[in-house]
Image 1 (cartoon, rainbow, N blue to C red):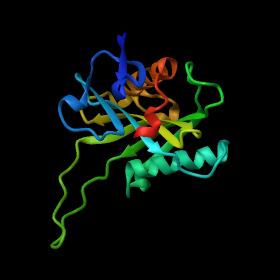
Image 2 (image 1 turned 90 degrees about the vertical axis):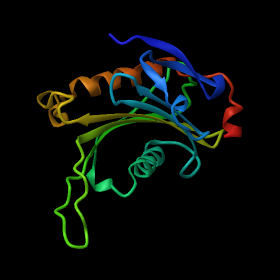
Image 3 (image 1 turned 180 degrees about the horizontal axis):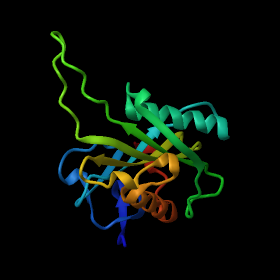
Image 4 (image 1 turned 180 degrees about the vertical axis):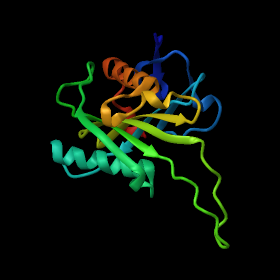
Length: 203
């Protein structure tokens, strides 16, 4: 059973409950001002909060917001979109935000490219031990603040570190790591609160 603790973000302007065993990455290395990052001390999962400029036209709706979600996912994975599969996208309710604020969550997997065969002009890339990374990406559309808030939970699945038989998203089998990450996301949706809306004018 995961223990959570109330965690201030961006100097206390935002607050939500995060797993107690996650460490603030900024204590280890520099993190950009618009970002807050936490990593599992006992594993490889990370939770990242990102304050971005709002993308897309004015207004809200499944189509406009869906395009924005796709744009942010593309920015997240860069040129490697062909190795990404989105499994589902759902509207998301934040318990402590106004009902009028639209939010959406997608679950995707980013499969690690296998190493190419070396050629004379292209040496072999090192083989990655990560089979794939599951991504739980939540987008909160703050139109009045011209802001898209992204909450990304990255769940690397490293060979030998998880039970491959437990994971088959095609069959709805998430396995322990993704199951835990979905619980973390649900806790964030339940506890996330904006204490200082001025934050979005500063970043």
